[in-house]
Image 1 (cartoon, rainbow, N blue to C red):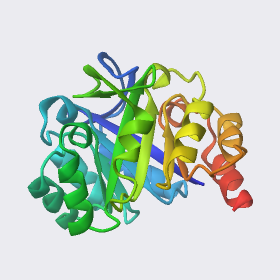
Image 2 (cartoon, rainbow, N blue to C red):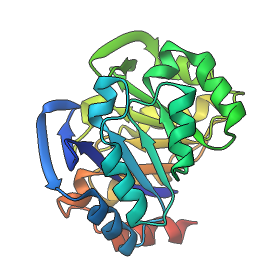
Image 3 (cartoon, one colour):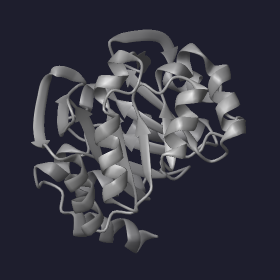
Image 4 (tube, rainbow, N blue to C red):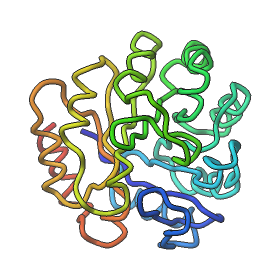
Length: 243
């Protein structure tokens, strides 16, 4: 299982939100590039980046910060938040991203996601953020009537590289990952699933790795790393030992 450290961008700074609430943001590092370099030094293999402002605006807002991250690390970077057109996808991949994450557009325009997967094989992930099991979009400001599993199944044969599944109720609160919902999604589709939201300790990683059925492909950690609750060396050793 791959452990992804998260850099959430708001106003050009690294922040963490509580349950996706922009008014409940804590700044952890004003220099995203330095944070990316720190995560590389700690041994992480990938980096998960979200343009929070972009998710609300519907287009990339923190492009300069993302470029600083790409310049500061040679680790593959996946980016989500406000990427909603083929042009934007092509632009970001040309700048050096390993993978783009499509969230709102996956619900609003699934045909675009399918087309993107054809044009950029292996480079497109789908972000599914759920509130009480229902998909939320537009920076989590709107909740649909579609379940996470139903949305994921729309892309079963599209060539999606991964699904990033976030339980909004747990995000940024260190209350533990929703292991049951993540495992249910992984079992429902053939697409690799990455867990997000609430990861607080090594116990969460162990629980995700111990699920019966389809293995969980990855997990994203934000606040637990920034607050020092999750030791990077111990967490990485755990995932690699199992591998």
